[in-house]
Image (cartoon, rainbow, N blue to C red):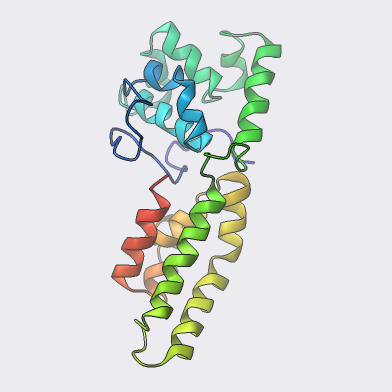
Length: 213
């Protein structure tokens, strides 16, 4: 499971950052490490790993260097960064006991695979929304006008290509699905935009879904 960020702070695919349009009114009073990290209400409506990433974004606004950014945080901010497991074990133990660290760790592991809450939108929901989006291109026969079966073949080819990416994404928030959709990193030359079924409209729609929760 990919739970740490100290080696690559860019590996998480969903960063909410300053844009709070997708956060219901009243759930977030302050877009800061303390405002986010102490607001327990948003855990019922947002993927826990997205909340964690949001804390990371706020921390990294202090400096582009990971360790420097953490050092510029005040003690309360540093504690919350450790609560969200954003620092190595040895650093976390400077702010809490091993027992408390285990509680935080167990929570992270449990809440980053899916949703135990009825209002909690997990990564599997994101993938299902993406499937609906792709199927709508079949419904409207976008790729091949008046040829339903050819459109269906394109949709199936896309779903086969992303099958393993989505499994890893749902299970461990692995960012490869996002890299494929954006044609970046390890998918710079064989990403979504290199496929015969690529369309700018479809890419825009899928990335909007991917970054929406």
